[in-house]
Image (cartoon, rainbow, N blue to C red; front, side):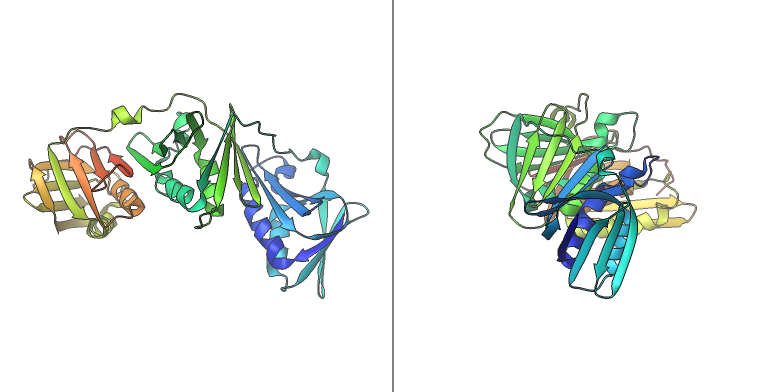
Length: 370
């Protein structure tokens, strides 16, 4: 194997596939990147047996071949080389050489035959979504994915596609986040749960442009094709929450508030409770006022925000971090927050339409006379 290519092109490919290499494994081959020549240049591949990433890179191939090189060392060397062409070759004895200007590095390599190839996906359905749209859908829901391995299906996000919409939903038992985007679709309805780990890597690769991402779904796997990159992941099995039924339809209290003011208030008061998560904040809704109070061993805090309120006064407790995460995901200037009782979840909604829903379950609060 022998080829040369521009440093920037190679580095972009290496940075992309490094996201799929394993950092905790007893199999050294999973810590490597498969480098192989193609008719168009070279192809870089990583695979940790859960998520696999493949990226094509423009290169001038002098001699065909393939090899596996340790990901971290390979990436660090390429990153620090001067700009310009990089020459790479596989010499006798499996020596992987990297040469650029006056720099020459010789690394040990691994047998490419031992590298786990990405599975071929025979898609039952394939849908196209703009990169910027998919990026926002993931960003606005990923924070609510569960980390509890005892409920594996909730460690991923539900991807739904029907005739009119694409929905992405995440739930962790304490909160629920749903993002909806209008999308014309003539194929069969899609209902798949994509692991949060895969979505996190995809989020890093997606750009804020309107180029298409092809999502190819088979019975138990999904393939995302993003320009020169492919990301393959297994799908999670199990019955996902009936989220439409879980979101309260009625309300006793509603406020309209500025998103930035709410976020700033919760971020400030979180300073008092973040070191000791057992202390929630108490939220009081009175006539056109939202009062947030907190007491912990670190001190006391009180925030008051002017809002537009309707319905009954209410007092309810929340984990402030959940409000912060949800409000950071919102791009709108104003939001509605609906409440029913002090023991029922609240729902953050847009002023119009059903573009997003963030539902947060309350927590018990102690009566401290605040």
